[in-house]
Each structure stands twice: as C-alpha cells, then as structure tokens.
Amino acid sequence: MSNIPFPRLQPATEQGPKAVLPDLNIRLVCPDCKNPVPNIVEEFASGDLVCGDCGLVLGDRIIDTRSEWRTFANDEGDDPSRVGAAANPLLDGAQLDTVISRRDGGSGMARDLNKVHGRANAVKGEKNLIQAYKEIAAMSDAIGLTKLIADIAKQLYKRVEEEKLLRGKSTESIIAACIFIACRQENVPRTFKEICAITRVPKKEIGRCFKTLIRTFETNVSTMTSEDLMSRFCSMLHLRMEVQKAALELTLKTKELGTLAGKSPVSVAAACIYMASCLYQQPQSTKDVAQVTGVSEVTIKNSYKLLWVEKGKLLDEKKYSGFETLPSP
Image (cartoon, rainbow, N blue to C red; front, top):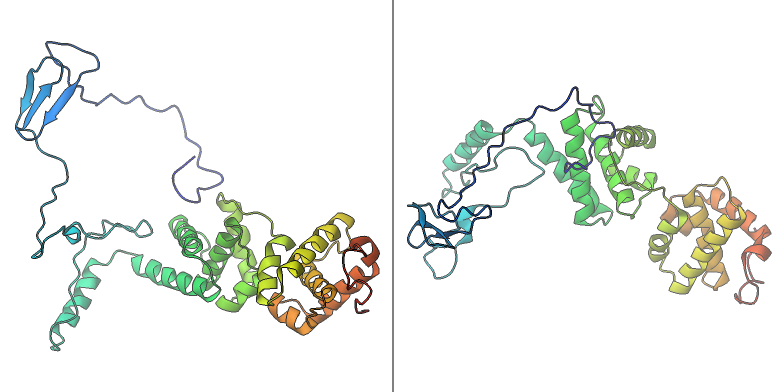
C-alpha cells in the first residue's frame, strides 16, 4: 500500500513493462579476504577504513557523517536550536527559510523587512494551506476534537488540494467534509447538524463533498450507529452510567426487533435516551434531549410512541422498577 495518506481508490494504470535499471550500489570488498559479506570498520578517530578480519587499510581520510554535538550556546549543555525545527509534513518546500524578527526597538523597519521577506520566500499555495489548517484547528477545538483528528482532517485537505478536487466548492465546505470524515475514521462520529453548526455550511453541500471524497480516496469510514452517539449524548445530559447502559441495551433490542426501522441513528438514540431516563426516575424533557441531539421534539415523541407500544418486548419488567411508571405518549 502507498505511504501517501488517503491514496486514490483507482490509481492510474501503468503502461508497458518496467524498464530494468542498472544496479548502482557500491560494494567494498577486502582484496585479501575477498569475503562476500565483508566486515568493514570505520575508524573515525584516525579517519581510516579498515577490514575487521585482516586489518588491511582500505581507505583513509574518510568523512565523519555522524552528528556533531558541539554546543554553540553561552551556557553549558546542548544547544539543539541550531538544527532548526522539525519539518512539517503538511507543508511543501524545504522549510529551511530564515525569518526576520519583527522586533527592532520600535522603529518599524524590521516589520517591513519581515513582510517583504515573507512575500519573496512564500511558497505558492502555502498561504492558503496554512489558513485552512488554522480553520480546521479552530473548528476541531470548538467541538472538542483531539489533535489527532485535526491532523487527519488536515492531511485529507492537503490531498484534496494536490489532486485539484472539488473545484468551485467553497473552502468551508471542503473543511467541513474533511472534519466529518476524520471523525468517522477515528470512531468518534459527529452528526451533520453538529458539523453544520460550527462551519455554517448547508447540510447538502457537506454531503456532496463527503460523497466525492469517499468515492475518490481510500478511507476507513464506517457507518455511524446509535451506539456511537450514546455515551456522548448521555454525558452532555449529565445522566448516570446505569441510564446510559439501559439506553444502549434498549437501542440494541430495538435494532433486533426492528421497532424503529427506517429512523436515523440520531433519532433512535434520542428516543432510547428519553425512555431510559424515565425508567430510572431521572426524566429529561423532550426539549432538553432535542437540544443536545439536534432532533426535533416531534420526531422524539413519535419514536417514543413506537417504543412505548412495544415496551413489553423491549424491556424486562422485573429488571426496571420504573417500568409501570413510564409516561404515556
């Protein structure tokens, strides 16, 4: 498999057989030992290349390619700053540019030099990438996503830019689709409404970008289920663990019997959470559940009505003390 993140699903087919290239590897063999697997020792102190079996000097004045740990700092200790920062795989170019400081005592000349130097050394397209990365990081922080998910979204956005996909689509739509796919891939799915709330992009637009990216790149996106959303919704409603477990069991039983067949995973999760909270005498209003899950109150009430009709099959009357006190729809 390719080392490129998010490779294409249908790579370009290679035309004709590959050309046989000459072997350019250099093999150094001791002329006395003639061992096919030579034991060559590099003595950097003397600068010699010596055969470890017979001691014959094979070369002199060799270059020491190891890291030199001489420090150039005024204080004692290592000075790792001289090697520069680590290269950012999300950006192109050598990334070895020197940056002129903006601080010069208040004259303003350093700031002007910094601007001119930045424009002269700017890599084509890098400014747009950096701005998109900042937006992805800000949106990820807004909905509590980890840095890992944000980095995956950045990698996917870079692949979209490299392949020149989604031309004509707004940057916000592409960013929203990348965050949505990154969440699905790391098994912390977010609903379309949650992504729409932070990006202010219509759901249809995100859906179009999402489908295009799924058809183009190899991703490990799994289908979102009600179980994936249960723990997060219950936590946001401050429900006890026993309520969360009951809601999860109710969701699995609902799927098994097909009680809410045709309903979206978010609607199923909302109705099961509402019913489980009533079972444990910790009822949540449909308004609170709707506000957290993004499902309308009417949808929750209609789904709950179907669950209430089949409550004898879905719930164990002996296990739940609040079975008889369930509110009628």
